[in-house]
Image (cartoon, rainbow, N blue to C red; front, side):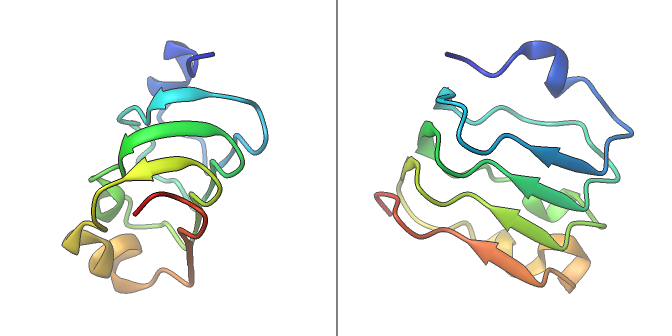
Length: 95
């Protein structure tokens, strides 16, 4: 199903683990200012990759692998986590 809208409105969460939940559709915009760890792997997200990873200045780890994302990797990913991202997993998509 779709990611519950209530999750997109949370602001203080630092770890968001959506791993292996069968979520589908486009990945929503999140308002998690202090996001450090994001795992959205092994779902059925599709469409373009989220374009706002560079907004999360605390982001260090992002798993977006094993979905159905399409298109190209946004240039802004170079600056994800305020240029301090340690891990970015995009494998097994349709990029």
